[in-house]
Image (cartoon, rainbow, N blue to C red; front, side, top):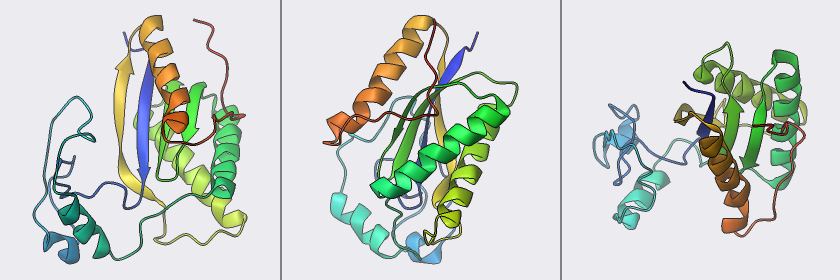
Length: 188
């Protein structure tokens, strides 16, 4: 039985549909990007982020995007975390770990009556609204990519392992540890 999820959702431009390492996409919507190749659909169950690839090809495609890749500053991350806390309290989400990186977010969130895709959609919408309210310019209209990556967590061991991974993610990237008010303790 699914008890929780480890979800990863990305900022616009983090992972392109024709990334040489593979993507979730069935097609490339942008003609500019399509010039760099068709979609690289993968059904891999493990992350392909570390797969050897043609980095120059990936960066060339990124240079032809309609908008620059979104990068969250520390100030923007604080707005996002605050929005996550507000919507989690209002809708009853239980987030056990959160890392808001410059170009993606990791969460460990309990199973909810809403599907996890809807939970993430609500979190993204709240964060986007809060960023606008705080005066940050958002280009394109949403700073988020459309989809998410999810891992089903079935037992306490899985949940604790995912929480450690999420909590260590910023540190591994050279950032300080993160503490967010949206996080509720996991009682096992």
